[in-house]
Amino acid sequence: MFDLSGKVAIVTGGSRGIGRSVSEALAAQGAHVVLTYVKGEAEAQRTVDAIVARGGKAEAVGFDVADMKATEEAIAAVAKRLGRLDILVANAGVALDNLLLRVKEDEIDRVLAVNLKGGIACARAATKVMMRARTGRLIFLSSVVGEMGNAGQAVYSASKAALLGLTKTLAREYASRGITVNAVAPGFIDTDMTTGLGDALKAKMLEGVPLGRTGRPEEIAAAIVFLCADEAGYITGQTLRVNGGMYV
Image (cartoon, rainbow, N blue to C red; front, side, top):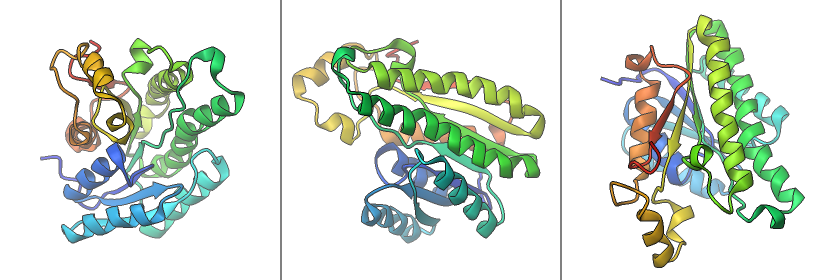
């Protein structure tokens, strides 16, 4: 079940946090995983080494998804070298949080460039390959705040909400080519982004989570593996919420 043997997957921002868990989970199911990074080549290589040590197939490629030309060239090169591209998980993202009146223009530009434009660039490059094969899986990493909002995250939540509209539109555009397009919207997940929060703030946030705990990156990865599998072939244009009941 959920066998991905022989498939090629690209996971943007795949060397740490949720991205690392996704890379490891896809590789564990047999996929050849190409994880991407902007900075931190050493960390990316450690993730690759960990996957290979468990018998998986992985490699790391460096490029910035905010650079559309570099993104298209890198994804095209991977598909050409490996002979196919079956899965693309658009996970790379940044959060530069502040109240709207305090957000700087360059911060707005960077968040939208990575989170939204980056997702579009990845999708455009991947679908060029997938259309020829008449099969493929696109997965966008959105967020619970893209649906419910959150004070201090106006730009971030806007970028993540936009990915939901992108998901629905691309699902309609590419269904006839056998490509499914879905989003996963994580809630309060235990990652580097949340470990720096104080105990009082964490406790307050957990009050809004019916399950009463933070989620694990592995739980997000499991949802993505499912959406990438043949068994999920009749699911497209959907948002899978993995948030402990934080937003229903």
